Length: 508
Ligand SMILES: Cc1cc2nc3c(=O)[nH]c(=O)nc-3n(C[C@H](O)[C@H](O)[C@H](O)COP(=O)(O)OP(=O)(O)OC[C@H]3O[C@@H](n4cnc5c(N)ncnc54)[C@H](O)[C@@H]3O)c2cc1C
Image (cartoon, rainbow, N blue to C red):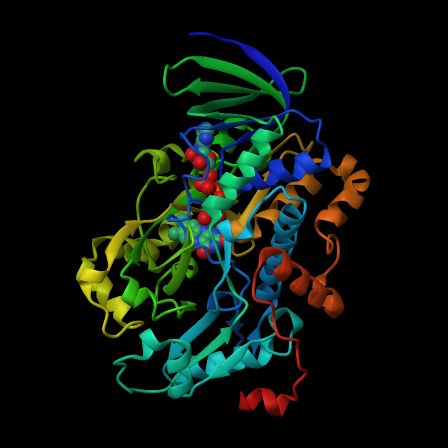
């Protein structure tokens, strides 16, 4: 067993979209920093970032109903939707920069225009959707949103979903032409290929077993070659833990106080996939519905057109489930070994509070294919079982922590946890995920390299013209970004926002 020791500027743990994004940002900001990546699998983008492990929605809150909540007075709060949309605009700008600088050759390899829609039925949900539309459609971030409760119009938008649909109760949908389907797996691989060409050392099939602080303030990683079991010790000035579901265990190993008291709750997922070209050709949209009662917000069912390797298919789900693994390729002991003395009470409190969620998830796991087909038939009334196959999706590990809302609160967002001196950071949580990778990695940069941020600002603004600006305060900039990124990425651009009166908005 060898025990070699090297020192590098930056180590990125995990070859998913997050490490790919941070590595690409840093290589543009400080090309001479030495970066090494360790990944336990044989390729980049094989866990949650893989194209078949997530839904590929460019989350911009155009259609995901869980980002807009109805307040007790009936009005709809769109503040979370605005935040998610602004974050997606940041990703679009960075990806456009990579394309314009020829660091990415062909945007069609990872992004495509696919309209985003919300679809609801029943009086209550139709009223909610209309109010959501009223709150959003005059906002420049959501320009081009249309609403309809006319079955003939809906049949034009979503013929497959309207075919053989029995008319029982009202239905309605909103649609935005300029939504996107993103192949995050391809994007991850493209970014790693680029990093490799810039001399970033990418070590596949290396598992990071341990992280410790050295007496001279560096971080030392114990890294195991999975093929032959040899162990290396690698030191770095800065470590990013981008291990996806594997991040919590690594954060715990680092021992930083900021990582104490945090737990993780794994939610597994299943999709149904259809590759029958006759059916696929009848649907071209990502259509989100309402979450079933008791379901966690990120398992809202949706029927998605996917564009993978320039070929379209349909994906339905995810059906949430329970598995104690923290990674799809993880261990059945992941959940239990994440319980430590410092998070035991928090985890127990979460366990008690989330009994009904756990029961719901276990029931979901037990569902037969035919039961899942019934859920799909809410979207495609005449769906046939033989056209759909089951596909195991990625794992999501939700954060559990003590918050103002109480002990052991389950969180549904992502969170950057970093050491006070900025020498190590980890990304925990799952949603909105890959779509917001650039904003989240900018947050890592701001938290961990505050001494450099001022000097880096001109380059950051070159890569992300809206850097440091609240987009909503600059409608002109929103229009400019929509159109320049659509052009760079080869996407449909939003129609110009036509200011409408409240009365016109109500009429739809
Ligand atoms: C069912 C589902 C649907 C989703 N849908 C969407 C969507 O529509 N839109 C969206 O934007 N996001 C979506 N997401 C979220 C998105 O996929 C994730 O947020 C994103 O891919 C996370 O990227 P990551 O780089 O953090 O993790 P990952 O892609 O999981 O990468 C982490 C890597 O770290 C490696 N690793 C872990 N531990 C170690 C270790 N000890 N040593 C070495 N390597 C290690 C793993 O092997 C893995 O390759 C979805 C996720 C799921 C599961």
